[in-house]
Length: 311
Ligand SMILES: Nc1ncnc2c1ncn2[C@@H]1O[C@H](COP(=O)(O)OP(=O)(O)OP(=O)(O)O)[C@@H](O)[C@H]1O
Ligand SMILES: [Mg+2]
Image 1: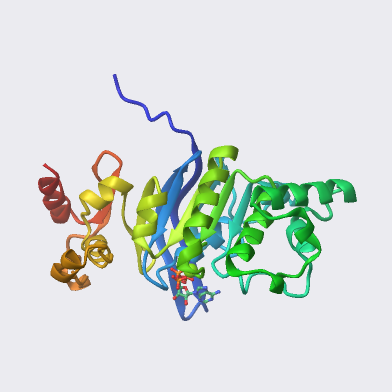
Image 2: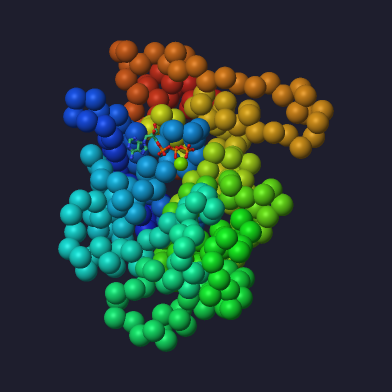
């Protein structure tokens, strides 16, 4: 009997392409991204600066138009033009947390306005809005009386909690977390990560977790996609990716992770990714499942070598 995958696909991205620039000088920031995110998991996207991670997140929350491919949420296409009611419903379901809590909060607005903004114009009474803001602030560990203060009165970690409250107030199912802890002090990163994990457990949230830091992702992600210059080059569950990285770019990223033991760190060999190692002029690359659940962008020769390595 064929084994069926029982996990529910919440978000399905296929052959996603996002192009910036003019028609004469197009720049493809995302070239061909395909992945599924299952309900309740944390799916990571890792890659260096400029590789297209944020652009994928922004395409999912519909703030950048896509130039090809599809994004389905609960099986429904969400790219392109949608009626207002559907757009509004999507805003309830899909929210984003941003990298820089210093820059992403409106300095001139009070916390209650910042957190409640997404709820306005939806026919809720002032009491309902106030109640939901207080609930969201409590859920992220902030006192309800903070609602009447301004962002500058808070530390970086507290501001990121406000950013999370602003997403939570909509009662979303899916949150795109774009480098949510990168701008924070090392000492408070773990607190914010723990808060995100707790909210996930309590509310059954699904996360798309964007980062360039694989050591953080190992701790928080169930599965990881590695992106290089707009191409997803490898995708696997986290442990598989760390144990059997197949793409040379993934291996280079893994070799760059700092090791806590100074002796190991000293002996570490840094791998450098040189795209000229591929011979793609005749044997073209495509997206292959090298082993169940472990995907690789490669040509047929590389696929054969990868499968040998996995034996
Ligand atoms: N609105 C835009 N107009 C033109 N180019 C853009 C736009 N947004 C992003 N880009 C370009 O697309 C590429 C991918 O950008 P993106 O912000 O998605 O990268 P990233 O992987 O999130 O990087 P970082 O780790 O620095 O946040 C970059 O070269 C960027 O300059
Ligand atoms: Mg980014």
